[in-house]
Length: 259
Image (spheres, rainbow, N blue to C red):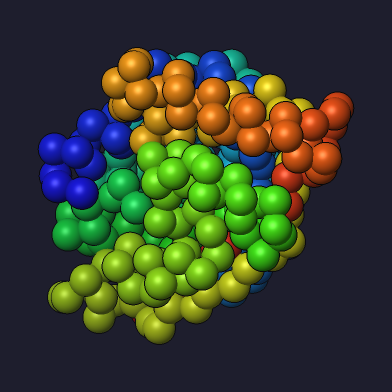
């Protein structure tokens, strides 16, 4: 994906902010605990916070959270749903916080949008020594047969390179971490995966997939047939055709310590 495509995808979510808040999953609490385990204190920045899916999990775990989000529509939805959280406009490349002001920086399904050449020094700046940088991604568990079928039917626009466990491990091994120069301020990365799931119906899972960047930027004449194929697949499977079901998922975590 070239720079223009990346910007288009990264800026696509605001128009779907309400749907994003309604349909996107939260994060496995065990995954968030593991991400924060080595952090030297409770101050956490949720960077690229979106509508607050990860923010809400952090609040539930008792963290002292600040949320930063660049999209005004997403930020409005976050403030509406979590009025007690300090939520600021800003980006990974321009974080509106003082030096060494947080003990951990977490990003939920957002780190792949960061320009780490710029964001890396910014993240290192706001992290206290010994602080943690962690990216979290919700993955579809394609070891389950019907989920693997859904991934095939959905195509790459709906199920991207970080959306299944094997591809996530490869994609996030080092490419989403700070690079040369800044990398010397961080230790060795660690990856871990934690069981998760989301209660869905066929219709609500189609609505969830419709909030993915690849679908949001798709021309209308392609979007509706793609979503129609996904809906037809779900309606054809005994696991998903009637009523609610649990979408088998994992929350993957990439964690690194600031030296």
